[in-house]
Length: 131
Image (spheres, rainbow, N blue to C red):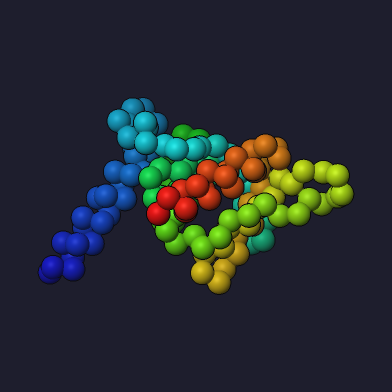
């Protein structure tokens, strides 16, 4: 019973951190979003898919779309062990890809622009170093 109470509180805290998924409801937690925007990631079928990402406190969440009605994934930033830009595809280009490592698993991402990819890496890296 005690573990169920702890689990319930954890779920409530996670939902509070992630905010409302009802697009008609304005959430007071909006101010805690450190960074948000579209990123591309590889899905379970090996295809690049565009998702809406939000970094809030210690949670990086991905949604199917910007309206945040369908949470696809959420990970605690403290579980990320490394994040870095990938080498560019061609010499002289700036990278749009980066890799986030959680334990022994690498997860590739792609920003819309080189500036976007670099901003995500910098923001998440700062959050990692602040812990």
